[in-house]
Figure 1: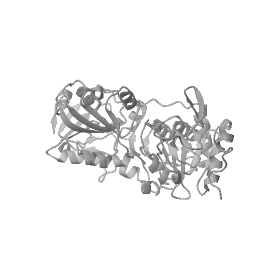
Figure 2 (figure 1 turned 90 degrees about the vertical axis):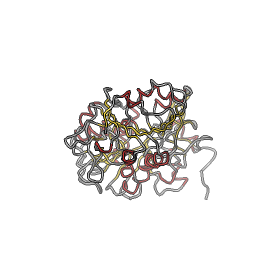
Figure 3 (figure 1 turned 45 degrees about the vertical axis):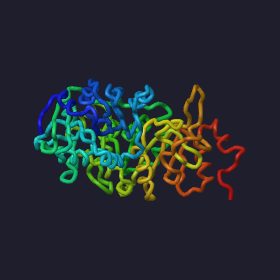
Length: 432
């Protein structure tokens, strides 16, 4: 391992090269900004996901971003005409994408070395752990680790999953002075609170929880933190500020899970600076590779698993659109289908897809629950995976119901102004 400045590390990339970076909070921000000062790229291909900054690099000629998950930055860059492309695949499959691309250079953010001399991967385990290790062992490739003193040292489950890199695994070590990116704690509105209140009765004491990002999961965490229940476990792709609040309220024991008892398990964390500080050397939270955290068969082995995920729209068959708008990429597949599927395999598990009943499009209110998806819609999760659909108007239980029974249940949690049209003159979806 050798130590270089950020500028020297950025100079290691060739004008024609391949670079892979982790999702979101694992990205080496200072290195990406330093690369953006260069104007000599002819064909730099970068694979990553969920950019947390508008890096000038990706507006440069000769630079292609292949993203497995769009956030606001990817959408802005794409809409401005820059070379940003979506790579379809759930989060678990990012590992095979990196393996197939076999980039010459990989780069990741790390926390300062601990007493053992190893560098924690901090807020991200994800799909790149094994790829980073392979890259570091290959003399023909380059692994750059960007140390950020603002990142917490987080823990894995050694020896199999140390969630860290040793000095002998790193080619180049460089240091960042940029504050790590944070995500403000979303403030739930009345619709989000109503949705959270509707799904609360389905969460029993001792349940193992998965929540995503946004106002609805935050409202759920707040209500659970304030409520009388508890003894919860956490098995969640993303660890949020809301899940920290649940810990702080004394509601998490992790003692009734089927797997990883005693630990909240996650594969990446994204939230406030307070979350970063709380996670530092936090024994009860462990970061594991996404191939384990998001494996439906692993998810299903948890007792009383409850998965809470969002959607953009859904049809009366139960087909879910969660990552595109009008056929254009909006976000990504992530762990959506893995958790919807994994949390509905056992009778005492519940998988919840949550969405407001309406949206405003071009100044007009439209129903998010539709009789049929619009032409060109891209389905994220197929109908046979669904269990519960939750809006501010109630809960539709779909498991074990016929096509027409499911349509009736979904129509009854749509906004009242649209229910008659959803099941109107066209009749049932399936006739006997």
